[in-house]
Image (cartoon, rainbow, N blue to C red; front, side, top):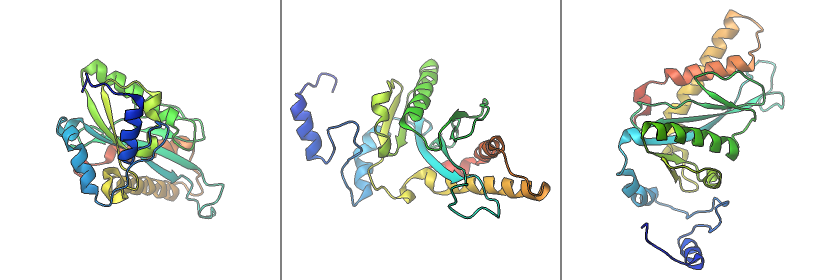
Length: 228
């Protein structure tokens, strides 16, 4: 459709007719009762990319302080967000983006943004760096992500990444990372946390230790957990 031309008003009417907002800063989209219809809509795109080039991206939010004297939901508990992404064949787990309020030393295993939540700006920077690496390697990939991140379209210039946004209200059971993968990472992290408490009583983890435990949990994730 490279030669297709139309007026801005035509595009606006087309988007509204199909349930989309004409504004790029809005995550409004069509509501679907049958999610297989969405799969049918994007199947043409999916078929253009082998499984190794189809990536799913999602955010894992968790609290990092499990001390016995810390009430659940307490404001003293530290919240952090981890951005995880991998391909559909389980052969490539991308470097996580760790988001937390405390300073931390970056390493070759992860990148860091100093905020408890993942901002659109931090995600845009992460995607742009990934795009640069793909361009250098002559690769192009498809990335599935939440529609609430539609703003990154305006903040990036992605030449080797095609973003495909999940429809609104897509259940977690239909999002690959939110099934076994997130559970595995959380269980491995908590296991490491408890083992450290047993070895060193009354030890409170530093944020650096928390990050390293999460990164190690991501590394240990087996391929058979990932294959979609």
